[in-house]
Each structure stands twice: as structure tokens, then as C-alpha cells.
Length: 148
Image 1 (tube, rainbow, N blue to C red):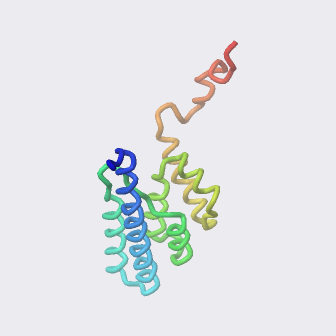
Image 2: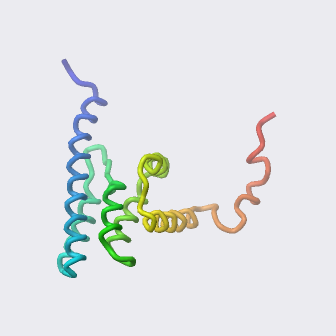
Image 3: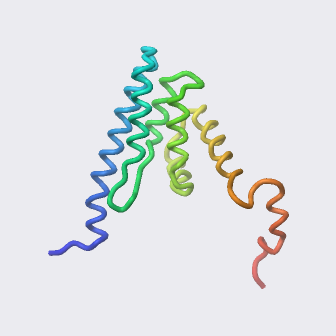
């Protein structure tokens, strides 16, 4: 029996998702160990590897970000100001906003990761066209009223 296009895409996407998740997990474990050993070369290599993993896409041009578990692991294993923290939270923040909010309902982020995520999202929001200043007032009340 022939599979539909949707079935074929799902078959391909699941292994891709598992592989990328495993790659992120491995890379961030190496980074945390390198941070603890204060091995700058290994830290740099792990960050470069994480960026390489972030560039992987499947045939549908889907790409994945680290999991909340990866974010928490990096935050628990590194000091404040760590470049690994900055990278993992910026990658995590690149998740679609709806998916990000759904994910956060089920996963509690490390306290400092939550603060950093809010900061990254705020920067992105402020750069959006039509934001900043008094953009709500510019829309006017008609934007919020129910149609009659």
C-alpha cells in the first residue's frame, strides 16, 4: 500500500527529531564538562558544534532547537554570564512562539533561564515592526471592539 505524503513526512521527521535532540544533548554535555574543567578549546568546539546542529534541516526545511531539558542542564552546570547559556537560550527562544508557550506549560525552566528567555523575547518583540512607543494607542480602540 502506498503511503500518503503526510505519512512519509512523519516517518522522516521522527528520526530526524530524535537524532537532532541527541546531538544537542551530547554537545551541551560536552560544553558543561568543558566549562567545569575550564577547557576553553573544548568550550569553543562545543559551541561551534551546537551552531552546526542548529543548521540541520530535514527535507521539509524543518529545524529544531534544544529542549527545555537541555536549557536547564546548561543553566545548572554553568556560571552566570556563560556563553553556553547565552547560546542555548537564544536557540530555545527561536522556537515558534506558540510552541514555546505550549512547551513552557509542561516544563519549568531554571529560574535564570526564565529571566534570560524573557529578555531575549523582549528584544525580539521590540524589534518587530509596529512595536515600541505607544503602538497600542496608534491602533486605536476600533482594533479591540467587537463588530456590531
